[in-house]
Amino acid sequence: MDEKVEILFFEDNPGDASLIEEMLKEFADFPYELKNVATLNEGLSLLKELPFDLILTDLDLPDSDGIYTFLDIHATNSRIPIIIFTASGNDKIGLDAVKKGAQDYLVKGQLDGRLLQRSIQYSIERKKREKVLSNIEIARKKEIHHRIKNNLQVISSVLALQADKFKSKMEVMSSEVLDAFRESQDRVISMAFIHEELYKGEKLEYLDFSLYLEKLTQNLFKTYRFVNTNISLSMDIENNLSLDMDTAIPLGMIVNELISNSLKHAFPDRDKGKIQIKFCREKKWEFINCIEESKNENCNSISFTLTVSDDGVGVPENLGIEDIESLGLQLVSSLIDQLGGKFELKRNRGTEFTMRFTKAGKCKHQLIGACAVESKNQIH
Image (tube, rainbow, N blue to C red; front, side):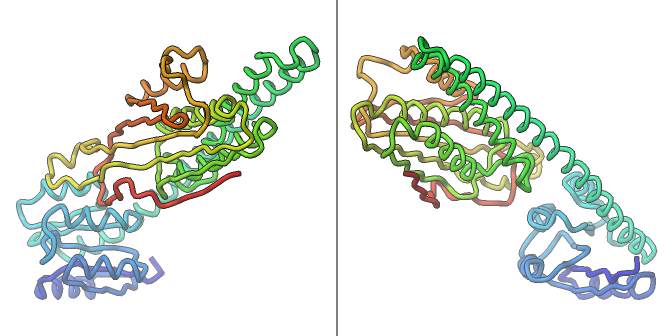
């Protein structure tokens, strides 16, 4: 290694810190700079300010203890290789840390300079190879999303061409056939948008659902613009709300169906109206203070609430959603079941559809605001 290696060292014991410094001075065959901090909070603050190439850390610090020291550091610095120091007899914690992302663990009392030097070099090189492989995998997944999006757009175009073919026939000019083609196009486009956002975004497994909803609703208002020109949309969506594909696709289709239904049926004799969408989380993700529980990646869960409402004519009191002969609303019911959710239909001053569902969440060191709606957008 020719470039200087910037090393951050978490260690509150002056004797142990000096020992590591002496080992590096004697055996390191690469340029380096070592920065020692005594507490977890001090080190985490420094990581926000300065770039480091390697982290060395003792697990027992004044403000943190055991595996949680590593987990706190790794949660926000997973791109930096981390080597942990354990006490003699704590191999189990060391192995657990390696399983959770540490590059290596070294046992105090069994450590020498050559072993430390070799561990540092191997850890940095392994991390570099991991990054190369990760970039290859990212490029592969982006290409997959791009191709799926293109294929879905082809399907949408085919549906449009087929609709134009029927449209040329006078007897079906305003028939349900054309509506069926348009609705099918919207459903396909709702899925294509998801793959497009995943292709463009940095996170290939998760979708920024608030940005996706903005794009989806803009397309729907454009589609139905000739029907209602003065219908406004108000969106209260929590910022930075990421969903995996298994959740985003059915939820996007649910929003697509409900907004389309409002645009088509809620305002038959009015030139003005309002549609609202609210979507937020109801529960915080909490860190599980137990090693055994933290091994279970789905040890915690989070609840979501989606509300789509309008101030239109409403659904008749004697008609339930399961009784409505609409492919779109039948699809909504099926997709809610797919997500394991429950829904409620209110008919006061229009129609209000509320859906609640719960998804398993990974145990991460991050707190999420409970239903703290942060973005408000309007489309007219």
